[in-house]
Image (cartoon, rainbow, N blue to C red; front, side):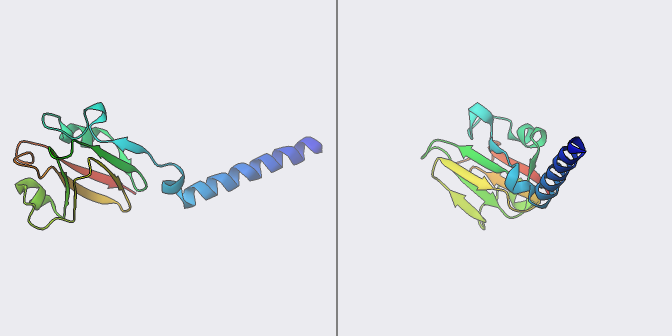
Length: 131
């Protein structure tokens, strides 16, 4: 009888944890991801591959590390603006060298380096955020 109570208590605790974690998954199990890994945000890195290979979801944080005065980070509104490196109407612009972006909604996000010709030579990343 005593072992049955212990087992049912353990099952109840596990069920409560599963229910709670499903209600708030992005708050409990998010990842902090450094874009480009040790390379950071710079010229000469394949961000297209990085964006395709690293799964991200709502609640994760993307960290862009770059040298102030040599790189920037700009969030664009659309794929069209991203493809054309059109930075005339950005969502946000950053120049702090260590930008952390919390992913708050699912869908595509478009990041570019607006410094000089960096976007045109490939310092840009489109990434799909999963729910």
